[in-house]
Amino acid sequence: MAKTDHTNHFSGDVTQKALIRKNGKILLVRYPPGDLAADKLDMPGGRLHQGELPIDGLLREVKEEIGADVTIRKVLATGIFTNLANVSTYFVVYEASLIDEQQQFIAEEGEIGEIGWFDEKEFFALPIIYGEYQKALKSVFDNE
Image 1: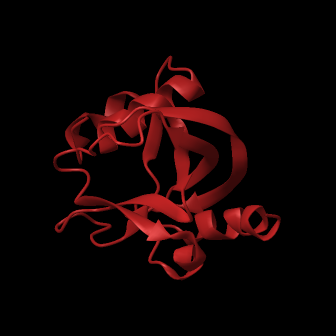
Image 2: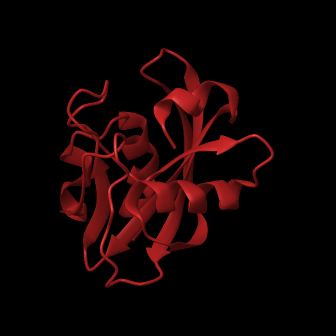
């Protein structure tokens, strides 16, 4: 969805992310040049639309951002960060997996600069858009 549509369809300041892992790698998206978060990495996902159920919203956002369908397994972590507009935002990170692991990714035009797999051992050193995601997921990784 185009960024210009954001102001009147979101449901609160809640964002959801999908932690997609495969063979020791994590699927991350990079924001495009010119974006406020240019060159930062993030997990696919986004905000809920008004009247949308949380899982439906996450499935929609992932499909929009990477062009792939996922299965949502469980909640891994929650927390709060201050977004780039200086608004406190509640987040939920779900464990997810690709339905078709061979499907080619399609980056959402204007929103996503690139999509790639990153070594999960390096996750905590990567330039993730909000460090609170990394802090919240630390206990998940430590307990594996």
